[in-house]
Length: 178
Image (cartoon, rainbow, N blue to C red; front, side, top):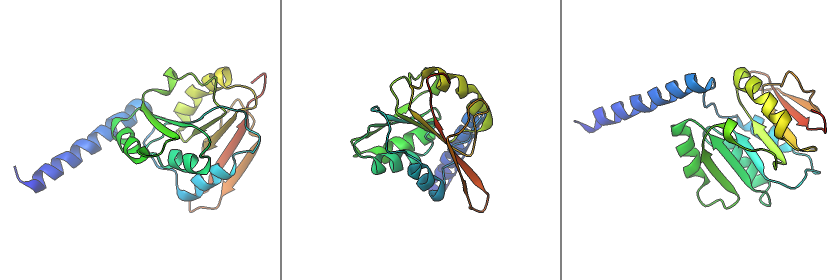
């Protein structure tokens, strides 16, 4: 087998793997753009309770890296259920002591100790995640969402980014009775 053919087959296998997991998870591993990542980091309030940050569905790891850099005193746990993006994110996190990347489903996580959760997931995964977030996130913790609102919570703050395709960022503050 020639090198070119091997590269082509590896590329097709990677594309196929991404396509299969996009269907299984109802969400492709799309990276957050630089403006969205900067906007989400800017939405982090100064009065967060103690506890780690989570990025749910971290994809290739861009936002997780930005969170870890912006808040080096906080532990950031990124979770991804698609194998190829998880591997890339895990490799990118090497050497960053406050960032760990885990392979797994969001549903299996216990978020009861989180101070901040960041997500960039499609409408279907967000709808499924809504009940879990309301049940597990502690009072005063913050949920940041890139592009997708939660139908049953009122955002504390929204920011419309004037990017080529307008994106809205949402910040939710969890209350005693969410």
